[in-house]
Amino acid sequence: MSRAGLDKDPRDVAAMFDGVARRYDLTNTVLSFGEDRRWRRATRDAVGARRDERVLDLAAGTAVSTVELAHGGAWCVAADFSLGMLRAGRHRKVPLAGADALALPFADGVFDAVTISFGLRNTADPDAALAELARVTRPGGRLVVCEFSTPTWRPFRTVYLEYLMRALPAVARRVSSNPEAYVYLAESIRAWPAQPELGDRIRAAGWGEVEWRNLTGGIVAMHRARMPALRRARLPARDQAPPGALTGE
Image (cartoon, rainbow, N blue to C red):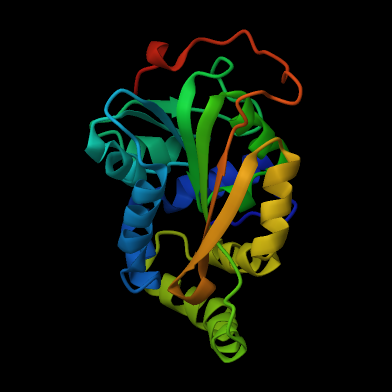
């Protein structure tokens, strides 16, 4: 069994997610008391992908979130740096791409919308990941970040943190293929910034019109933003293939 440290070494994090891939979706549903399904629907609605659009689902894991995004007919690609997670989701009918959030294998401005759910806090440099998402998004394109956050009501926050640090690892031992990983996940959630700070970091990465709303009492926050029609500065281009050139395993 393996777990990553809060220094977020990419190799350790990828190996940890490889280890939980087999029962990842089931474990998430059990630990969230089924709320994960509602969070995916809320993310789909916030993205609002249309039939003629291209959407990047970064940190997509087994691609269950990508399938949700594609319900409206948009072309959606699932990208993740854990090949074990992508293999676990290869039966899903969406394109799959191995990808590092800090150096995405896509050309500038090719996506109409980009999203990352419960993955930004696992990157070694969240600010660089937000900038990379900005690079691959067209002017006027949309960003949705769905991430664990800070409950706003103090008594509920106290109960939630108690569950997070004590009960979550205990439940994971019963249902997860790598329960040690969920100790790291609980620690990473607790260390993650609150809603306003994340909003500031999204703005600093070049996004505009930043707003957020709380889900499930603030256990999860959904941040939305838009790429300005006129970018403040051109981001460095990468000589990479467009997303249409990528296929799943």
